Amino acid sequence: MPHLHREWLFSLLIAGICIGLAFVDLAGIPQAPSGYRFRALITDVDNSSVQRHLIVKTNAQVLNVRLLDGPHEGRELSIVNMLTGKMELDEFYEPGGVILVEYHAPDGKPADGMARGTYRLRLQLLLIGLFTILLLAVAGVTGLKAALSFVFAAMVLWKLFFPLLLRGYPPISTGLGIVALLTGVICFSVGGLSRRGTATFIGSMLGLLLTCGLAVWFTSLFRLHGALRPYAEMLLYSGYYEINLTDIFIASVFIACSGAVMDLAMDIAATMDELKLKHPDIGLMEHMRSGLRVGRAVTGTMTTTLLLAYSGSHITMFMVFLAKGLPADRLLNAPFVAAEVLNILVGSFGLVTVAPFTVLVSGLLYRLNPVVEGPAVESPARAEPSVQ
Image (cartoon, rainbow, N blue to C red):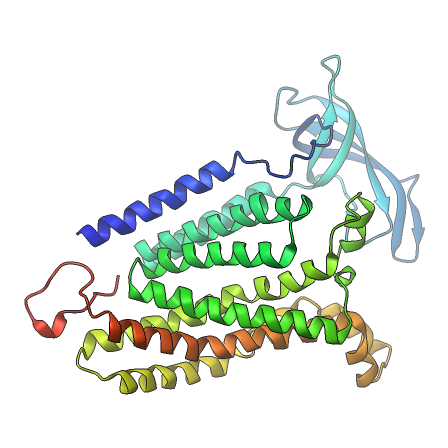
């Protein structure tokens, strides 16, 4: 029972930190002036000013909308939807659609409205809710802790990591600190405050430190710069000229693979924990050999994880290259493709090495610290921590 109390106290602490982070503003950047933002139904569309260039549309689309929420519910106003010619950013609306509208009401009457995209917030909340329910149904209390870890990771990145980079903190060391914090919280939250959680944390960090070192080295050898990432150039134009985009790119490499690294480390640590629980008299070398055999099987499938993840997010880019008939050597030598190759392979180094790292750490922890975690049991053969 004391062990369970400790787990719940840790979860409550993380929940409290998440709530506290919601009120943190480290960046200290003044918010852009804005007014009311509510849902609106499009009742009419005026496309007379829209200019069409093949499949690209530019200029202004004028919409008549009726507000569905807020203090001015039911009021109608005319708003503008600016089309920039970038299909990945623009939305072209039709009557009957529900959009998010931002407007001002200086004299109590809605005016100066702008379209801010099709309204998707309720669907996003629904998707989050369904995901949480699925976690709880499949994993029970562990699923609840996993959902809490998910929220914590999102809050730390949004409220700590990104603002610290904007304030000029060094991206690599700051990224390592943030990853260590996230890894510790996630590993101990899901794996428990036990040797299993400790082994997962140490094994993950060893793999991520190796990934960081390789990312620094090969980014220099490849002569890559951080402006290859989307919106990097826009960030400079926003006034942050001193930000080191190359170091941000390096940090993104080991942060992007940290989730998969933790996943593999948890698999190995849980296996080592179960082996010791079922066979408390197993020797150190046999314990480690058994863990490595499991690690080899898991690593065999995990090596394609990053390849599929990154390739899936750049399908259209590769289709463009194929459609233009570009040769493979020219394709692979392009800076943005070389950056993704570095991302995949360097991240895979961390995935492959985390298995032996975690096996080694787990074996030593169970060998050097054979203290029972949790309540004592009658059978000496069960004098090992139970899997929570």
